[in-house]
Amino acid sequence: AQKVTQAQTEISVVEKEDVTLDCVYETRDTTYYLFWYKQPPSGELVFLIRRNSFDEQNEISGRYSWNFQKSTSSFNFTITASQVVDSAVYFCALRNAGGTSYGKLTFGQGTILTVHP
Amino acid sequence: DSGVTQTPKHLITATGQRVTLRCSPRSGDLSVYWYQQSLDQGLQFLIQYYNGEERAKGNILERFSAQQFPDLHSELNLSSLELGDSALYFCASSVGSGDIQYFGAGTRLSVL
Image 1 (tube, rainbow over the protein chains, first blue to last red):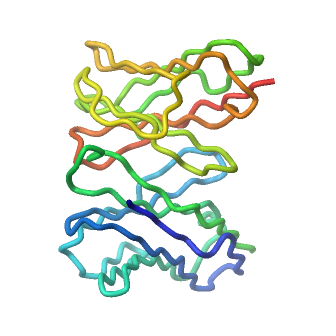
Image 2 (image 1 turned 60 degrees about the vertical axis):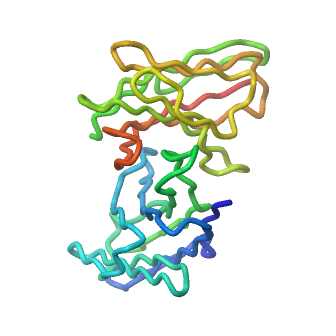
């Protein structure tokens, strides 16, 4: 069975602070994909990143960076110099690369990030 | 804008009723997924269609059904509605089953 755990329910920071959102996953598959989605107050789910299980290179995109560590089954997301517009709910998700539920995304509970001016 | 269109945006109905949620995928996408987001269950996968065929099923109640039409749009039918069905229902689409899923803005269903 797959499981994604985001231990931080809510995080509150002041603008320009760096913030890291934690994600730990469980799967029996050796090939899988990890994702981060953002849900701003408007409600839609916005895709941020996909990472496959064979690629442990960290990725940086502007102020966003992701740290994938297979040894600890973690896929953490860091926002550098946070801004008020980063306020949203962030979801980590897992998808196995095969099996009968191939396309299914398993989501974590989400982390509510509030960035204060 | 993800390119996935969901209608209606909001739906208010009474217990026992039946509703239909509609989803138009991004141009070129063959796969459509439905997810339910509620406060107690979080984001849960319901069902996936690929090019008109059911491909995967999740925690979808028997009172719920879905289909994907030849023009690739999809409908999620919810019947005998209960208060607990109140939730945000998302549709997502991708080119194939293994590709990135792009989500629509959701339909917020309120059952009174």
